[in-house]
Image (cartoon, rainbow, N blue to C red; front, side):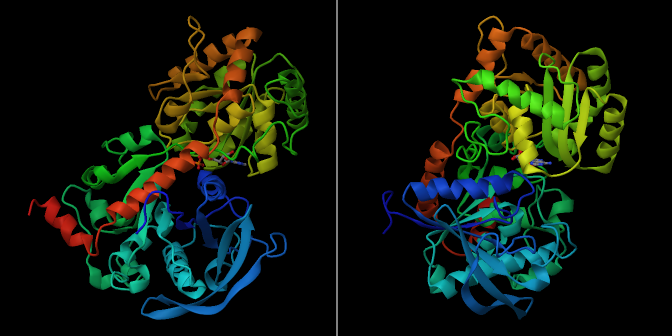
Length: 504
Ligand code: ADP
C-alpha cells in the first residue's frame, strides 16, 4: 500500500525534452521537472522518441534493450530502446526509423501513428525493463491515449493493475484531432467512440486525443492556476470546456518553474558578462553586446525591447503588428525579435527591420544561445499573449533582469504584477483587454518608467530575486501523484462517466 511518504516510480512521457529536442515550453518542462522530482527522492524516468536529430554520439546514448514488438493497427511494429540521462534522471529513447528518422519533430501527415507508436512502445518498454511505474505522467495530446488504454485494453493486464495516470495540458489549443481510423491503429476500435452532448460537433465527430486524456486520466492538470480556471469557460475552453467542467473535481493548476541551474545569469556561458542581484551594473555589457550582434545603434540609454516567441496569433503578434511601426517611429526604443512561425509575420518584421535598421533587428530562426543573450541584454520583454497556459519567457526574462510587458492572462497573470507608481509595487507592466492600444499604453508606461533609473532597478531586482525554480511546483506534482493513486478509478470509467453524465 502506498502512503504519502513512499518513494514513487514515475514514468514521464513527452514528445520533446530539453536538451534533446525542443520546439517550445513543453520541452523545458520535460527537461527540468523530472530533475526536481528526482531530487525529492522519487524514481522518475523520462521517455521520448529518438528523432533523427537526437545524436547518439553527442548525448552518449547506449542500447537499453534488444528489439521488441509494439502492437499497431492489428499488427506489430519493431522498436528498440536507447538510454541516456539528464543529471541522474534516466531518459529512454524509443527508436523506429520509419517514424522518427526525419528532420523535424512534428507536422507530418502520420503524426497520429507516430505518437500512438511512441505511447504504446513506452508501455511495452516497461515490460521489457521489468520496471512498472506507480504513476505515468502524460503530457499534451501526443501521449494522452495511454490513459485511455489503461482503462480499456490494459484494464485486465496484471502488469498495470496498480498504475495511475496524470495528464498535463500544456496548451489546450493543440488537441490532436484525427479521423476514426486512428482508433483502429490504437487498437481501440472496439471500445466505443466518445461523444458528449455539450461538445461542439467538430470535436464529437472526430477522435480528439486531448479529450481522451481529460476523460480517462485519474488526475488532470494544467500549467497555471489561472489557466486551469480559464479553460472551464467557453471563451478559452477550445470546445472541451463541457468535458473539463464534468471533470473539474480532478482538475488542478500548477505553475511551471524554470531550470534555474541552466538559466542563470551568474554562470550562463552564452552571455557576454555574468551578473547577479549584487552586480547589476555588469548587465550593461550584455546590452551593448546584443546591440552589436543585432547591428543596432549602440545606445545604452535607449530602452531595448526583446521578444522571443513562436510567431503565432496566440502570442499576440496581431497586436504587436498593429502598433510596432508607430511605436518605433514615435518612441525612442529598440526592438529585437527572435522567432519563427507564420509567414506573414516573417514578412512584416523583415520589412520593419529594413525600414528601421538602427532600431529593429529580426532573427527568424530558433536559436537557444541567442535567446539567452536577448534575455540578458534587453531591458523589457514583450509577451502580449491572447491566452497563455503558463509562459516561460516572462519568467526567464525576469531572472535575467529584463522587465516583462505582458497581457494579464493565464500564467502571465500569475507571475507578472503591474507596476504601481504610487505604491512602488509590481514586477512588470500588464494590460487586460486584448487590444493593440492597451498594449501600446503599457509599452509607453514602461518606456517612461525606464527613464527613472532607481525605480527601474527596483523592478529588475524584484524579478531577479523571485523564486521561479521548480522546487515548490515539484512538490505539488508529487502531491498530485499520490492523489492520482488514491483516487485511481477502477477500469472502464467510460460507462461510469456516461452514467454520471446522464444522471443514471
Ligand atoms: P510555448 O511553449 O507556447 O511556445 P513558452 O513561453 O511556454 O511558450 O516557452 C517557449 C520557450 O521556447 C522558451 O524557453 C523560449 O525562450 C523558447 N523559444 C521560443 N522561441 C524561440 C526561438 N526562436 N529561439 C530560441 N528559443 C525560443
